[in-house]
Image (cartoon, rainbow, N blue to C red; front, side, top):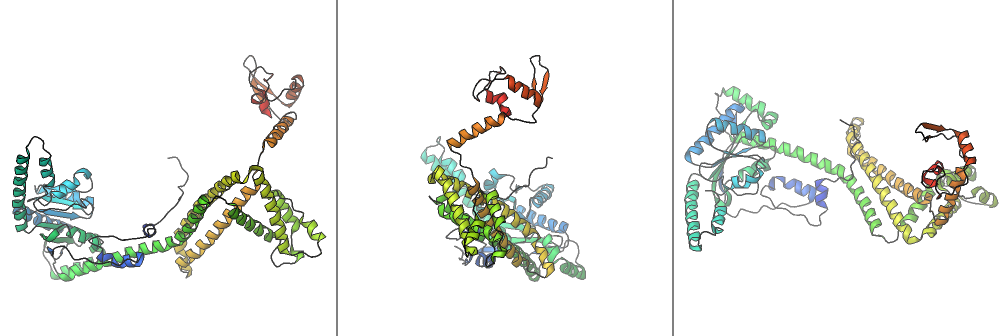
Length: 550
């Protein structure tokens, strides 16, 4: 596998901060009550419980806990068989695709017809779930499969009636009669299923979140219909093994419970719900901690994005560029002329050299200081700033303010984007190792905030220096400068040294000419203009042939 460059984050945001960008925030779900604290804590949203349209008639039976998974599945299959023989529809809930396949295999062994919904049959999902309320139907579904479709007792006939009404071969009277007959048949099946107790929910495992379990239960007993639900658990389930397994196993061993016997008690159900609360609290803490770390970069993100928007919207950037330039040269001057220092501490030759070499600005600071009777560090700073403004104004006048603004915008945006990407990478690296500060008795979160603030200050300084450097050292080339450069290139071409030129001869052999040969041939060849045909006879212009040596 070819080693590629590391992926670089261009921008990142957590879901919580993304949702907070909306001016108004609201939501509606049937299972928000268990997460009311998180909604209040993160988004400042109050959770209001609205009573159901019709009183619920669903019977939520106590959990049954078995010693092993084998006993649990055997009891669940026995319950499914009993419901199937009575004609009651069953929905079997699982926490994973793997479990749904396992139960499907057990039902196939028992020769019980069933449908499996585990996100592998997207097209038929809604149709299968809609018919899950018909008599003798067994449907296995994961938590995510078939969401958003009501399970109607007796099955859904809306599609069938729509097909009849769209049938052009029947006259309106026949269509109405057929639809009425179908509704009458459905009413019979609906009453039959209602009499059996409605849809039966059988769950083979508790989810980490009570909300998901409530969603599964809520598929039965909708709109005042009857229904029932029961969870079949074992001590081998992940949730039981972590939180309540040892204690319940000790009780079972003490009571010498026979194989296949279950514990069914309110205290067990409550202890499982307590375990779920612990997992929910832990997951909430993880999300909250992630959000607290992201809040740091979120504040910085707002500043950077606001600056980018201001740059994009502005017609004139001279004010922003001037502020960056003045800040950059003030910092540079203070490095050689420290604030509140005496003249003996100043390094004026070093400052002059840096300004000339790095910024192409010539300021006779030594002469100015020697000629003046008294001068302060602030006056030196002002001299440098005046020289920088003058040099910059000269560049702008050459090309015109309007044309230069577009160039300034491009430089600003490129610099901000480039340094922001590097800053995000630096924050990622800092985030990965900040927990180690805990060993030094320091609060990792506070350390992260402090260092992220320092990194952001360095980012702003880097943007300021980079933009100023590019704009101050850019070379504005006019037409006259281009002509002068072309003449200079021709003059340099006449005095080339240390050149070896390899080319084929007329016979096709490779010929290598060294410096003396070139000098001799140069005397034999007459003076040639850049755009004249090359004397070698190639037919090309001199500048594209032997003139390329220049």
